[in-house]
Length: 159
Image 1 (spheres, helix red, strand yellow):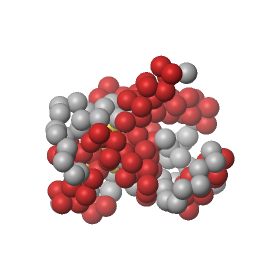
Image 2 (cartoon, one colour):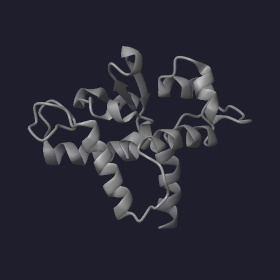
Image 3 (cartoon, helix red, strand yellow):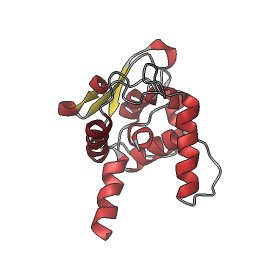
Image 4 (cartoon, helix red, strand yellow):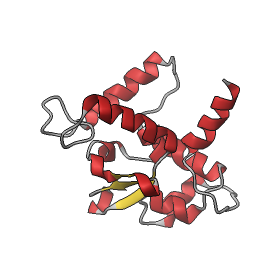
């Protein structure tokens, strides 16, 4: 959920610590990402509620998602395994690895009206050309909401 709702790379989710969650600004700090740079991305209200429940239940000491021994972050392989297990449990048979969630985030952000430059910042792309792969002919609007919040509200209204 966090990878999709914030557009994270699998390597980024494993390095998160609880203080990277910035509740008052609904942002997530990504430290030492690709190119060894820090950035901020959007934080979904729905995802924040789940993160708070997770935190209260597991009380992580340093890493938000610790590895088996707790002193190291969860491995990228463990995150990928969890993704494939969740995909299997949900009955999803379509091809696509965990990076598909990041691509879906980008596509859905544009569909919900996020501007291309804002998306570029959230994805941590140095070059706009990389971000433009998600655009055909999109009009930019000023809203910036996580697609999980947009689509989650629609599902909530139908359930």
